[in-house]
Length: 90
Image (cartoon, rainbow, N blue to C red; front, side):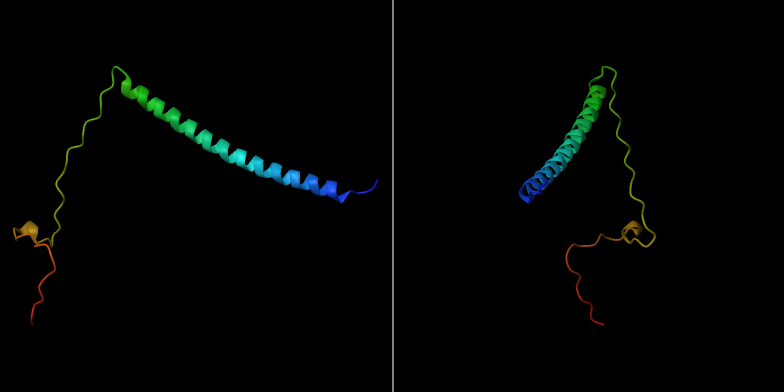
C-alpha cells in the first residue's frame, strides 16, 4: 500500500474548503436567526398596537430643570451673551 501524496493533498484541501464553507454557513445561519427573532418581536409589537383595545401611553409631564446654587441666572441676573468674553484689564 503506497502513499500517494497528491491524493492526500487533495483530501486535505477539500477538507479545508469544506471547513471554510461550514463556517460561512454558520455565520449566515446566525444572521438569519437574528433577523427572524427581530421580525418576530416586531410582529408582536404590531399586534399589540393594532389591537382594538390598545391605548397609547401618555406623555410624561415635563419638569423644569433644577437650578444650581451658584447659578447667576436663577438669581435674576441677565443671561450670558453669546460669544467670546472681553478681556478685563487689572
